[in-house]
Each structure stands twice: as C-alpha cells, then as structure tokens.
Image (cartoon, rainbow, N blue to C red; front, side, top):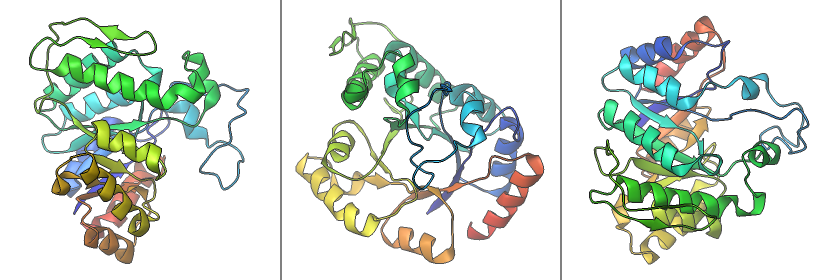
Length: 279
C-alpha cells in the first residue's frame, strides 16, 4: 500500500518545492493539495470538520492554488504522484480546467490524480455562480465535458447548465487518456452514482466506515458494469497508527493519504520523519 500525504499549503507554510523534494527523498508516494479560491467573511456555512461548527482554521483562506503548487512540485521530482484533494470542479470553467489538468498531467509524465469534490461552503460557491442544489450534477456534467476534450478524436459534448463544447482540437492530452479520478464525499447512493459513472474510485475523508460502506460501493460498481478489480479506494486525510493502516491494507486499498500539519518547514519535516516509520 502506497503512503502519500496531504497538506494545506499556504503563504505561511513550507514551500511546495521544499516539501516535494523532502517527500521524494524519504520515499513517500504522493502529494495531494486542497482547493479554496477564497473564503467570504460573511460565512454562514458550518465548517464540517470542526465537530459542530466553530472557527474556520486560518489555512482555509490562505490556501495556494493547487495546480500552480503541484506544477512546482512536478518540476523538482521524478516519481512523486501529484493530486488534488479535492478540486471544486463546479467552481471552474470546465474547458479551461480541462486544459490545466491535461497540461499538468502531460508535463509530469502522467503522475496526476484528479480528486473531485462538491464543496461545503455555500458562500464560496455562490460567488462562482454555482446554484448550491445543482453542484453535484454540475460537477458530473463538467467531468464529462472535460473527457470529451481529452478524447483522442474531436468529440462534441452538449451539456446541461448552459455548458457545451463543439468538436475541438485540444492538446496536450493526459497520457492515459484521462487522469486517475477519485471522488471525495460521504458514502451513499448519490456519491456512489458519481463514482461508478466517471471515476476510478473513492477518496473517503478519514477512512471511517469503510468496512460497512466498501461492500455497498463494490456492489454498485459491478452493477454499473465496471470491472470489479479496477475499483480504487484511497482513505484521505488520515492520522495514522499501525492498526489503522493494516486495516486499510486488508481491505485492499492501494494507497492511503496521511494528513500533514499546515506548518512551517521545521514542523512539516518533523511530521514527515515521524510518518516515515510507516513506509
């Protein structure tokens, strides 16, 4: 099982270049970065990871653009996997996002994983013109549009929500035809319909409840006609211990993503050295 990491990189933390080099030197498999374009100060949305609300951690409003930061990481590494955890797809123009993703995947030699998410901050999404109840289907629509642009032959896509693309020449192409795509979110039929439709697997935050939910996802995966052994489940944002990692390995998870603190170089490198015992 591969051991990767995620972190909120900001203007106050370790730099992407220093972190990427340190990860590859120590033998970690990958680096995943989150996305928030901005945090409206009039926020009414509850912070979902704070145990019932509370103050939003400082790093959320200072997050680096993940694609720019991962581009720096790609330039100074050769093997390190690079991913988003997650991209708020509905907040993007899908034609422009398809170009960004394809470029990063091409320049990194196919090392990119697209983590897809639906978001929790209504105010942030509203500033991007996203009607909140439609965000999941906007995301599905955008992914299909992007895949049309990544197709080997010019392929039109007539989408919903006023977003379509004519048959187009669009290069570069992701080396594998499309990047590995994992969907984040809480287990349930709605999420599983997205995973089985356009993704390669699931990115459950914290990895809780996998013993119960993984059989349900596998059932939905096979019912959708997907190859049984191709499903990938990657627990994300995990605070590790030996028993937890052994449990994920027993479930057949190919990778686990450990949470790093949003700290300065000294703090992050110390955390990496502590996590190195799990490699």
